[in-house]
Amino acid sequence: MNLKETDTLTTAQRTKLREKWKQAHTEGLSFYGFLNKVNPEIQGAVTVEWCGMVLCIETDGHCHT
Image (cartoon, rainbow, N blue to C red; front, side, top):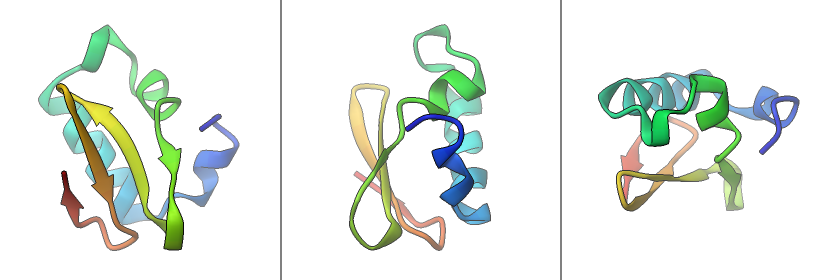
């Protein structure tokens, strides 16, 4: 997802992504570098690879693998 596309993230998704990035700075990426790894999915959810797992973050911020 490029930075312009991240404008479509909900506040809850952005908050959860920042929380996960702070827990483990994946591959030494900046937060914006981490956002570039986010992939849009159906119904507004997004996925991102994090610590060897794929996280799915729903529009309400609920996160699951």
